[in-house]
Each structure stands twice: as structure tokens, then as C-alpha cells.
Length: 268
Image (cartoon, rainbow, N blue to C red; front, top):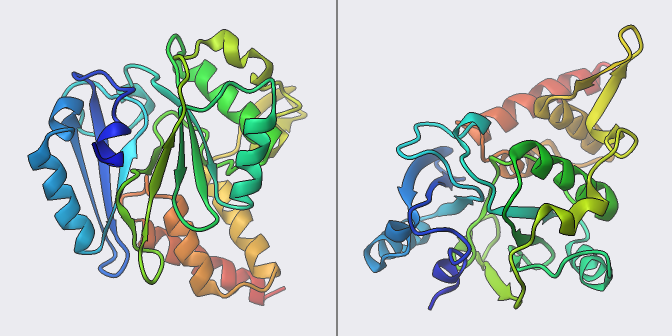
């Protein structure tokens, strides 16, 4: 059984999921929705692999959507099947920390997406969207993974397919662990408190309330920081597009964000 098919084991056969394809060279995206039993079929997998060989990167929605969904919003999510960490920076070190931490449930899967980058996945049940995102923020705070991957509508790289960000392309790999399906109580220690959420929100002194920072605002701050560090605009745009596969046109969004940031950075 291929890594791509094995990765679907923690879904129910009748679950509907989002499948996102991104072609970096063509600057195009394709999003579709299908049932897990169809996605597991040999014919469907052959079709995906053909597109993958033609340069399309393949991403899978981590939580099921309502039947015949047309979009990928929180309102479309009908169940929480997974928690996850997207470890772009110091990926191997974060994996080691998670595996060595006695408080942390054993992951159901480790997905190596490049030489140094990993995704950590847990199979869960009993979560609603709010509690899942609270734990995701807590896990990111604890282990230093990508703070952009804290929403229940997230798509991650589907293991078993080629990652075309690299030359030659890197075949993503799945490592499996024997573990139960976890409940909210297993992650209670990681539920985020207001102090843990500081990187992801700001406080309003006037109303003593909390305003959530949008993902676009986080992208903007990250882009400016990368420019200050001396990275080339092209490499920043490529990574930003990789970080935001949820955007209808990730490469257009990335280039537009970086272009604006370059202009502002040059005026300082």
C-alpha cells in the first residue's frame, strides 16, 4: 500500500476532503473535493500521480468537509480528524522534541516533505473547531512550529507525492506509529492561554478585549522580517506561496505581498 493511501486510514470512508494542486511554474492552482473511498481508489491515485509527475504539487485537507462542499471554510468543516504541526524551520529538531516529550501523545504520522522539513500528525476525535485550534496554537507555542498552520481548514502536503519546490523533486515520505485515536483530554496541557497566544493576537487596551491578527498580517510581518534578514525577494515569494496554499492564487498573492514589502523596506 502506498504512503498516499495509508495516510487516509484515519479518515472515514464517507468523509469528503479538499485536494489542492499547485503548479509553481505555471502559477496555477486547482482545488477539488472528493470522498475518501474515491480518493483511495487505484484510478484516482493514478490520476493524481500523473498530474504530480507533470509538475503539480499535491496537498490534502486535514479535516473533512460537508458533502459536496464548494469551499474550504470553517463553516464547511464537519469533524476534526487531525491535529498537526508544520515544521519548516529546524524540522528534525522539532520532531525530536515532540517524540522525547513525555507530555505529548505519540504522533500517528511523521511526513518528511524535504530534507529538513517535516509535518507531525495526530489522529483525534471529540474536538470541535475552537478547541482544536486552541491546542494547535499551544503546540506551536511549545515547539516552535509554523504559526500559520493553526487553522482546522489547513491543507498539508500529501505524503507519497513529489515536492517540486526542489531540483530534483523530493518524494515526500510517511513514517507511521502505532497509537490510539486521541481525545481532547490527551492534549489538555497544550490548550492555549492568553499569554501563550501573544504571537497570534494583540490586545485592545480600550476594550480590554482581544483582536485576532489575520493570517495576511502575519504574512506581512514575516515578509518584512525576511527582507531585513537579507533574503532575496524571489526566495521569500516562493516560500510565502508555499505557506499559503489556501489562497486561490498563492504565487500571485506572494509576489504582490513581497513587492509591496520591498517598496516599503526600500523607503526606510
